Length: 372
Image 1 (cartoon, helix red, strand yellow):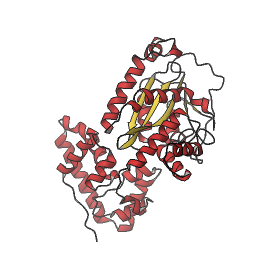
Image 2 (cartoon, rainbow, N blue to C red):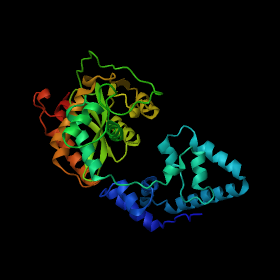
Image 3 (cartoon, rainbow, N blue to C red):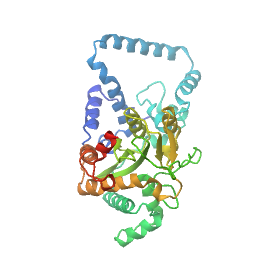
Image 4 (cartoon, rainbow, N blue to C red):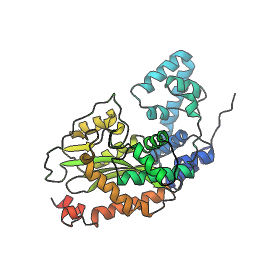
């Protein structure tokens, strides 16, 4: 039986600091240290949750409460049988959880409930838990970067036409590989499929509410979308909420995965500043998920979704993606997530407050957004 790795608090702290510095991607750190990316993410989340306690006077009391709670857990495991414990653990933690949420529930250092048992209870594929992330090859990065350029310029291109252009550039690749790369990047051609990410057919598709609508003031309609941001040795994903009247970027987030959390964070941040009457998106799985739709509806905001195969339904957001990529991303080779975050932060500030827009009579988005 393989001995379970044990890591000291000092080691975990050092890893969390490396993650927060964003000098390397999560996959790079996971590969470097031989630790699963999900475990690294758990350490980071735990550190962020406990950080406020460092600045309070209640540390001792909190430590005692934690110690008492841990003692109760130990007593509980001693009193009940294995089957009862597993069923109770499953009932408490599994209900209505997404795969990411179930992954986050894994306790790699639990000596009483092995990872194999936890994976079975959480309906997770055990083989995928021990997969060690491999950094993408230079060939894969080149191909995905070129796909991104083609898709940004021609969002109506599907996998067939992208394959033809790649081959014209001397990049020999079959269509299935192109489709796989596009799925991993979170994009599909506007025709014949949906605009950004693969739809979940089990989730409700909301109607498009903007046809013939005159948008006459800020916070009438916002758009939300996700795009691929390339790095020197990988990539990140950018989600943005845009006020369609003023072109103002209300909120945005960057992440290294396509998990839904960063989308929800961007929406929450946007709603903390203002609430639109309508929030428009494509029919991607992020925007049809209950986590997203329930969040939007709870804010009393109407949900609108692009029609299938309609390139013009999201034209304002598509124009912003072209602007940020041609004016910032393609001009810089980001060497790390931190560098990408710094560059995009600077560009969005420029876009909102300095860049004059012809469609706004050569005013800035911020001046139009805040003056109306």
